[in-house]
Length: 375
Image 1: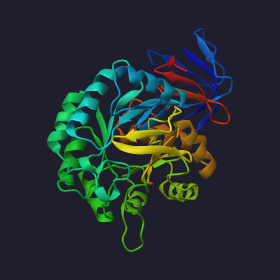
Image 2: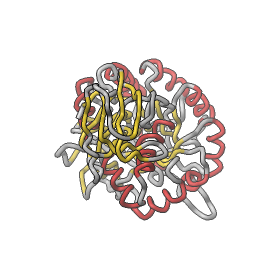
Image 3: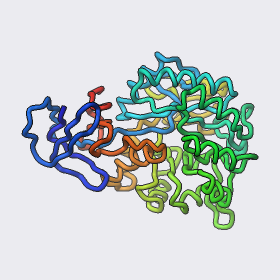
Image 4: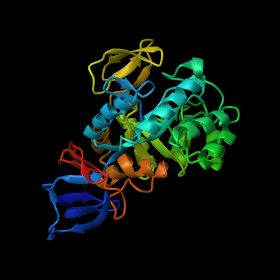
């Protein structure tokens, strides 16, 4: 198949009118101008073609939470992800006991066989700091356990892609080293780490910060924390919830100006009430409510977002003036790089044909997974 008459967003430039040849689910050729071959074509009609979005941090959708989702539930969530332009997502958990983690691990292993845009698991916790627990259940918080992670990796079929933890916890450095050496991206989140803790963690394999600004030590001129480190160290990819509620748009704009397009990662941190009409629910035993465009614990604190990835992209365009090339990086390429997924994240010959077609206002019109139109 060939996608013709497309405005193609590459990693370093935009082809105003070109075509993409797809063969066996991969991008075979990218050219400027008109297509003169005889293959089946899909006319993009001048719309914007970008790499499919990657959401490394989403807890559920359509009334379903990944903590108790079954294989059929993943099909429902998968469809809602496509509607946002997401061609890879990580099923993100909450701080819980080992058995719950293992249950998610086993389910994802099976669900990946029939859910092409499911990229694996993001364990958000349980190895976090109770002082920054946010909407995580403190009853399950504990110190890092390499043995637990080993068991989860095994039961998941090596589908643990990402883990959020507090680098200041007992045994954290050894845990970070083990995780990173076993293909798991380690991110600092729900943490009271100092700047020095993060610097040390980087040496052991720490590469990311989770929903930066939220649930972490901040930027202070005499006591620099995780936010300061996120701005400083080029080794760190920096997640951010771009809904305008979790982080003020002017703060996002300032942070983006410092960090730049090569390290910033749009996430949704969306909960199960996204794409649903549910107003009250539980977040792993914690009562929550939909209110003012987000989800809150009934005790007051923010619990998560209702954000969609395409809205996050539009927000970043509006708040920062990011170009199409930059938007492609912060919605796809950077996430792929942080997960060591070298087969996606860009429109490039030889990579997966995971693509999203958007109108001039960046609303999703079509989505292609491995070259097959799914929306």
